[in-house]
Image (cartoon, rainbow, N blue to C red; front, side, top):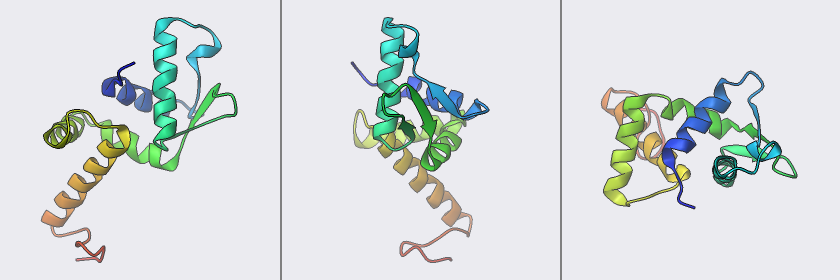
Length: 124
């Protein structure tokens, strides 16, 4: 199955918007192709550390890193910039690398604005 970055984005935004931020696996109610595809992508997000799955992967909870990733990818402009920047390096990359690229881009913008940290992680 090919990873679908747009589905990953949609799932993260959907889970963050849920009041409990706990998302049931679609496999609990169906074994349709769409349910299998969504469940696979939830597992990929868990592999990347953005979600935590219960023992049987029937429920998924967003992690702190997941909240940061969801916050970053909610903005359409930033999402497209991150994907474009990632495509310059590799044709396909996982959500972890997309998050790192987005974080680096935001850090560069903060530095250009006169805030943030320098290469050594110090203020200034």
